[in-house]
Image 1 (cartoon, rainbow, N blue to C red):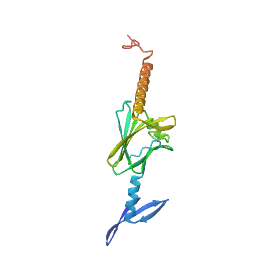
Image 2 (cartoon, helix red, strand yellow):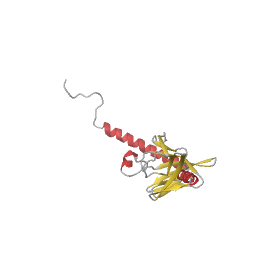
Image 3 (cartoon, rainbow, N blue to C red):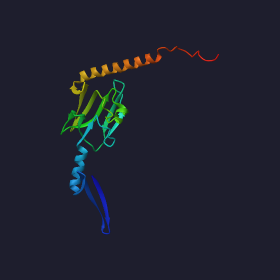
Image 4 (tube, rainbow, N blue to C red):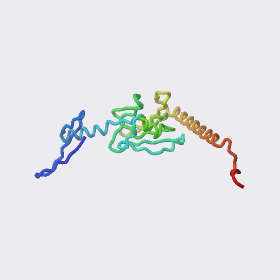
Length: 191
């Protein structure tokens, strides 16, 4: 979509365009505004696609797992669906997504460079949705290739299991890194 200001000897005016199947067509101002609003509203968050910095903002989040990311939707946009590949976790015509909490380890930057989304490795997700002045939290866990919606108590149990798994990995890594080393200063070298 594009808006162009045309300046003539009689003054200036705006002309509005939309690219439809590779062809730019001129629109009325009213049609342009309606199309622009629809474009901003019909958005979805896709775990398996590159992160869209124009629509979303991400920040580290202190999860019970110790690792997490919170994704905010920038003002002016309305996210009506959250998907992972072909699988839809949530969608609604009436509700909108406020934010998405991703708990635990995810694909990271390396997955974004191999054509996958930065969050393609997500396994535990909390989606906050709103309808008018009512808010609701939805909880999802990835079991194998499929996402399931779960109750908060079940979700919390999985978060604790994920935290314990991550702690065990850290402990094992530290142990592997210290095996075979002596404590204290090195005694090798010239005396």
